[in-house]
Length: 122
Image (cartoon, rainbow, N blue to C red; front, side):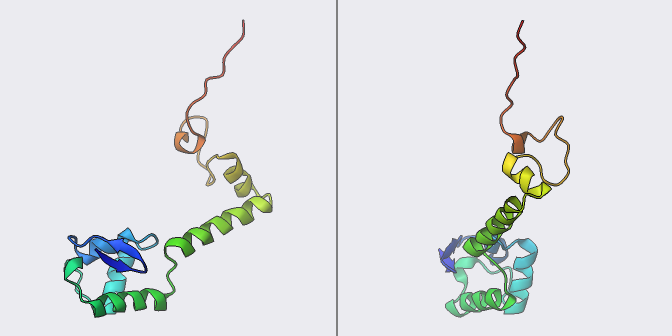
């Protein structure tokens, strides 16, 4: 398997489809990176030369794209900042409810978790 920044990407897929395996690189970013690196997007990852892999890594660094651990840390720091200043979004993050104005009367099951039935006493 080919490695870029210590992340293994599948050999049997096209490089355009393999790059999104890196956290922080989506399909559009992958296309743009390959265009700037001058690498054909249809080449299989296993057929890439070492120079082409290095060139892709250089383009990622020069673009200033946050990937993997750095991006996760940045997102975590942003959420921590919101919760520490006690803003509305921070409180919603802390309580585990939707943050961006979605309804919660029905739906929002992913964010709220498994349904807990509230019993009625007789």
